[in-house]
Length: 231
Image (tube, rainbow, N blue to C red; front, side, top):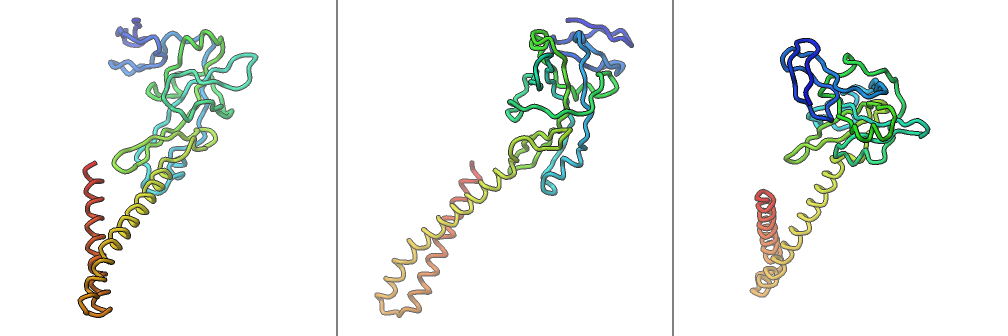
């Protein structure tokens, strides 16, 4: 599909799903094939700073405002998703009401608008409602993971991956401690009885057992750390 820029006249090839884009030559904003019912956009009431404060200091690497399209159909209550984004947190989610405005080019940037499913919009014969969400990227161990914060209510959708990471870290520490303890006991008991059998007395036998336990535990710890680093 070809469209022409309304400002400079440049031609552009667009996808059927494209609705709002920017001309790369003159930065003009272009609305492509608008629906019969003019979409509405909900004004966000939550700032990126507020969303970042939902998480520990230093945990957020970036935040980005995005408007996800929902379909409001006459005769039906609530909104239903009208997009193909892989966000499981939005499955069955009904956004809260907010300050709605008729969509125009000044209310959002093109990269903030998630494309809507035109087939669903035509079949539903309703109105597209662009609802704001803050996509918050969180720093985890070796990678970033995104979560959604509702731009009207300020609620975090789904659980925080930071909680999951903390639980996994706790399990790793518990496993490390048990491995250390098992290795220490396995090394200490034979050494204790061998040294004691040599008539060295309880005190030297106990000291030798403690030294053997520490060395064995340290060896197991380094082996576990080496596997973790290589994985």
